Amino acid sequence: MLDFIEGEIAFKYSDGIAVKCSGMGIKILVPLNLITETKIGDKIFLFTKVVFPQEGTPTVYGFKTQNERELFEILTKVPKIGSRTALNILSHFTIEELEEIVTRKDAKTLSLVPGLGKKLSERLIFELSEKFKREEKEETAEIIDLLENLGYPRREVIKVVKEIDTENKTVEEIIKEATSLLSGGKFGK
Image 1 (cartoon, one colour):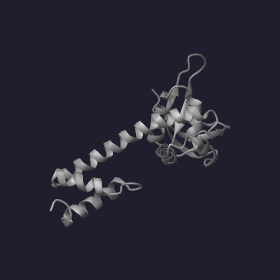
Image 2: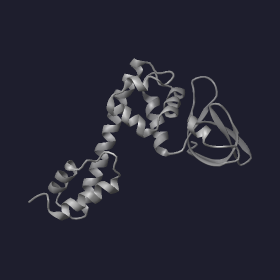
Image 3: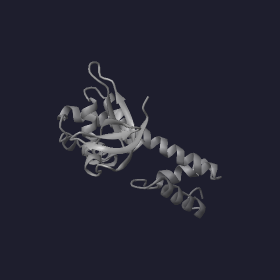
Image 4: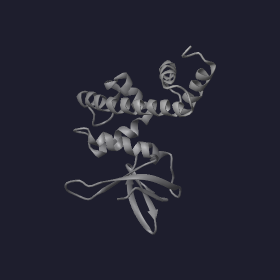
């Protein structure tokens, strides 16, 4: 429906901003950090999600990245997590911080978000851990396919990728390290 919006910030509210676009002002609820790091008159580009409640008017939510919007959509699919609570979570934690909280199973830190108790935090951690595991597997499969397409034997590629510490590394860094190991002949000999 409304995939993104580009315009100028006309007003700031405690929970969002109004973006002037083609002579119209559209109120968009955004994570708090976006409100504090922008000012009236700034040009802005946001990925959007329109939520239609059972009663009332539709609400537009805005995000700096597609990943942020995707995480918002995942959060709202968790039972008892509404749009406002999902936005609250994204206001308190970056995607990386949230991933770290989920990895550590740190329900205590997550429950500091208004609207999240201990039980709901634990449920959210369970739901998100599945999502993050799936993403990691997909990324690893991509790396293996790419290295195999470069001509390295699949069996060796899998061994090398399993040996590499991938934490806090970009895909490019992992591939560079893997090609170095594969070219050096450390594996498969």
